[in-house]
Length: 129
Image (cartoon, rainbow, N blue to C red):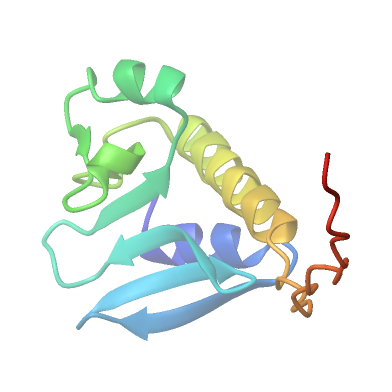
């Protein structure tokens, strides 16, 4: 597996776009949300993906897979080299990351601004008992 194979696979998903950010990092996004980061300035290149809490614990037990710097607390993993896991498993992890992020991005809608309702003015009657 190489950078071009990862890039082709990430861009094969619907609405997936790439952007070069933070120096030499290829960021793959769906609806403006990151689902994969491919660091080109590290030797060897590294790949960062979103995971679920259940899978996160199992994945970081593999040699060459660590909690991603800065976002590991949000259950993102980083493959320190592209061959840290077999290619079929990496493809499945990319798909899983894409699915997690695209579902979350799809659920968020712009909030509708509503006018605040004024309390109804009720007149009090002076009632003496």
